[in-house]
Amino acid sequence: MHEFTEETAALARAIEAYAHARIAEPQPLDRTMSAAELTKLAGETITPGGIGGHEALRIWAEILAPATISTDHPANLAFVPAAPTKAAVLFDLVVGASSTIGAAWIDGAGGIWAENQALRWIADLAGLPDTAGGTFVSGGSAGNLAGLVAARTRSAAARPRPPDGWAVVTSVGAHASIEAAARLLDVELITVPGDALGRLRGDALRARLAELGPDVDRVVAVVATAGTTNAGLVDDLEGVGALCRERGLWFHVDAAYGGAALAAPSVRDRFRGIELADSLIVDPHKWLFAPYDCCALVYRDALAVARSGAFKQEASYLDSAAELERDEIGPWDLAYHLSRRIRGLPFWFSLATYGTDAYRDAVETVLELTRRAADEVRSRPELELVLEPELSVLLFRRRGWEPQDFESWWRRLLDEQVAFVQPTTWLGEKVARLCFVNPRTTLDHVRGILDTMR
Ligand SMILES: *Cc1c(COP(=O)(O)O)cnc(C)c1O
Image (cartoon, rainbow, N blue to C red; front, top):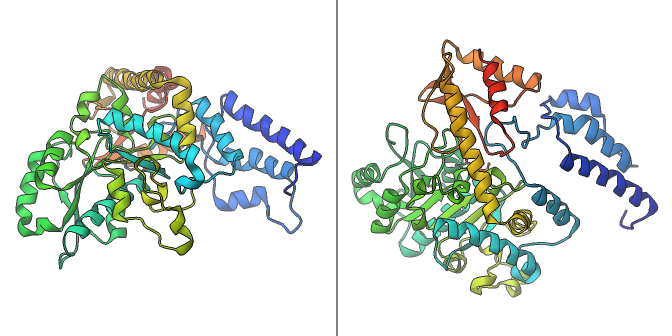
């Protein structure tokens, strides 16, 4: 089991061939299936004697993979899909082939150094200072939680816990993970009414803070969203950030989906004020072409966060690994994790391979496709654009459709392997939603989907 035998070599060839095909050739969209169906088709796979690698691979390839949707299919426009580059996917194989750990600098130095270079690119795009740094966590949910833990730790070091507990302020458009993080942290979530489109604005935040009176001391952080998941809208980062600065409030920016567009000159001005963030998250596994699971968590002052002990795990055998040099902070001092795959490496490798210009161009390609798709919607009398896309999410209504029509529509599209799409709710109304992140999605894909709504 631990030796590389003739049998292992044969299995290696089979796996290499399978992986090669998945990377090199167009893959089906695939579908979803119930657990009962899967059990019936695949049977018992864990047995005392083992079923053998070839049989396990067959079950994966013939039964399980077809029941696992490909997020990078160009007609997958549901939720926020993905589009990892070839170099990123290839290097993921290398990460998998290497038994390395990125918990502390002492054992993960080379890998963490590479991760830090990739993080620096994001920090520079955002305009964060030299003190910025961070780590890669599993996803935006974990990143948001970490940012809020760091914020609460800073408040807790400065003043006693208020009798009514701590609070976080955000807007109605914030991702569900902010509410979940507040619940996990047992802090109250205070929401600020958004503008007509639900965006958080500096003036509305000022009014809400004034309403809070002395309760404002309970606030550990303000969370703004740079690219809402539902509609791709960017909050007033400049107004919110400036007010946070004025009040000494921690400014957390959730750019899990939208942060990729920092690389795109055509929309960069929408992010003005992001340079004021105390913590920032961007998911390269969404629109920066990295494989799962990869969220860049960046702090304005990484050393201060590490020194605050927000994530400290005390154990005598860990002490010697504590590294607090500015460029050698252990990822375990920056988020709640210890053992971790060096998950930023595929992203780093891809950035190094293609260069940042290619990233800029790929993000612009997606933005341009979104604009053309909006024009296509406008040209069809049965459809109506709900709002002008700010980034790459398109919301539109189908005149005359009831909510159940949207439901049967997306199921039919998936059954027929045309596309994977998910409707959403916008101001109480069921509408169609397409989210673009894949530069290989074409206007023809969009037309094919819109044709099914006639
Ligand atoms: C997707 C998303 C998240 C959650 O990210 P995961 O990587 O899925 O955990 C958080 N915030 C926003 C704005 C998102 O779009």
